[in-house]
Amino acid sequence: MKFGIIGAGKMGSAIGFGVIRSNLFSKDDVIFADSYAPRIEELNNSGYKTTTNVKLYQSADIVLLAVKPQQINEILEELSKVDNHAKTIITIAAGISISHIKEYLKDVNVARVMPNTPALINSGTSAICFDGEKNDVVVKIFESVGSVTIITEDMMNEVIPLNGSFPAYGYYFALGFIKAGMKAGFTYEQCKELVCGSMIGSAKMILENDKPIEQLIKDVCSPGGTTIEGVKVFDEANLDKIVEDCFNACVKRAYELGKKK
Image (cartoon, rainbow, N blue to C red; front, top):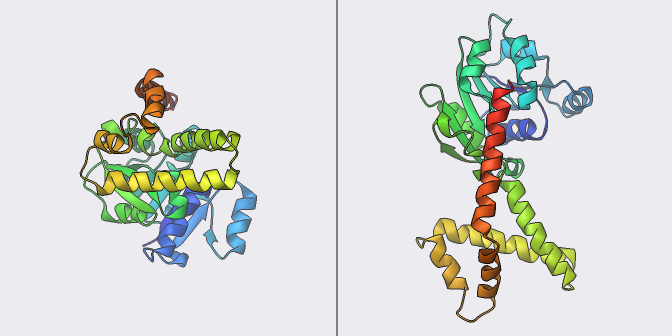
């Protein structure tokens, strides 16, 4: 079985390297295509197989479209003219529906996936939906770079702020505390280590603890102590509303991208 990847940018490469590293596919069975010639040259120099979009589509069993939503139609139009081709298509383009892919590529099975950039370090979280039965190979592809959650397609836009975009929001929050810490006199490296370590530990507490998150917050907030004063600032600023507005703006854009197809 051969796995083709159209779009050898950060995400496409991370997934390609991940399946090789996990031995799901051999290096010889992973093929890349990309319009950026220097990237293709770099891959060739590293011993990876590369080819054109059309030849990749003809020779691979599963094809990952790791391209931006704005590029998807051009790629689909090109591939739609190919007769003998891959039977399974994976798309990670935000807002692009399975039905839209199948308007161009008639006789394929489609998996729609929202991954995130921690896949670059094998810590990604990917949401997947299928147009039919679950494809175990597709699931294993994304498990090679992190964890997988299977959802229905009607939630694929809504999932984006929870995983696809969430790293940026987490980084934003971390950066705010790092900046504040530096103003207080710590170095950047000290702040980074403390904040990131606390974020990792807190995430583990949520995942590995049966307590509701509200109770975990209370466990840190001693009455009359320091933490509760900071929480009061969040409450006064209505942080829940700010996050909800962020969530809704992200989802709204996903629907807009789908309409612009």
